[in-house]
Length: 204
Ligand SMILES: Cc1cc2nc3c(=O)[nH]c(=O)nc-3n(C[C@H](O)[C@H](O)[C@H](O)COP(=O)(O)O)c2cc1C
Image (spheres, rainbow, N blue to C red):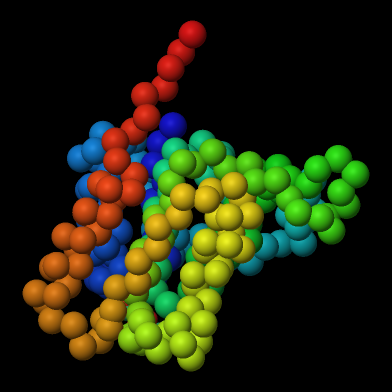
């Protein structure tokens, strides 16, 4: 099993990419095999085509590889900025296409899709690292912190990952280089505390 790291941000020189690099380094230091994707750099196609939408639809080979990696991940790290209270479109498209029925969740026998699905992901921990230009209190009180509900409940909770740690770094636009360095050190600490070393696979 490996650790899956996904970053959704258009600029390689962004603070989000600095976060992703530090998270990847921390995972490697802990001994994980890391599967990392910079969605925008890879040109991930965020548009779910009609043929893929049915549960038994034909899935593009690159998306199928993403699905396998998600299903096999022991830990998942997500990095993206707050864009209108949502993930950037490339990250949303990755969710739409990769968290497929049969991979991330399934409906029980006799449930045509109206019930509560069973989560299928095996990851024992998920860490979501966001950036924002809004003060945390305003994000929570005025906007309801939609990214919290999206990741903790609508996505990971539904797909069986209940151990979710989320941290929003900000305010980014007024931050000093020193503050950013401290945040990157915190990223390392979060990965170490929330994910830790890989679990040893036992073979009989
Ligand atoms: C399209 C777009 C929408 C944004 N929407 C929000 C928002 O709703 N709330 C917020 O606090 N910041 C918003 N921002 C600011 C980004 O969150 C901010 O630029 C980013 O977190 C900074 O990290 P970076 O330097 O890695 O890009 C938005 C930025 C863009 C480009």
